[in-house]
Length: 94
Image 1 (cartoon, rainbow, N blue to C red):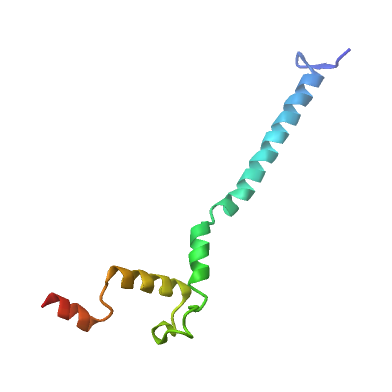
Image 2 (cartoon, rainbow, N blue to C red):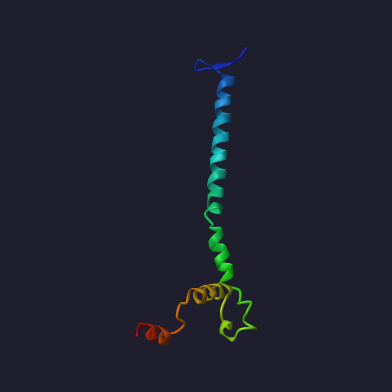
């Protein structure tokens, strides 16, 4: 009924070839999508924040020239009481 080659039925050999080709195709797809998975969403978001200008630049003269990320850091530094200038640092050391 089946043609035999090297003592194995031909139908079984075709299954092996089909299975191997499916595994190879899946491997290629995984390799192709590997590059897409390496992008870090947090890094992308921070880059976006570092490109846009500060939303408070028109209200606060100290915000002029800052990006959104700089504005966020500035607000955090002010909330934590970090000195703003070298002179303030020297005054704190006295």
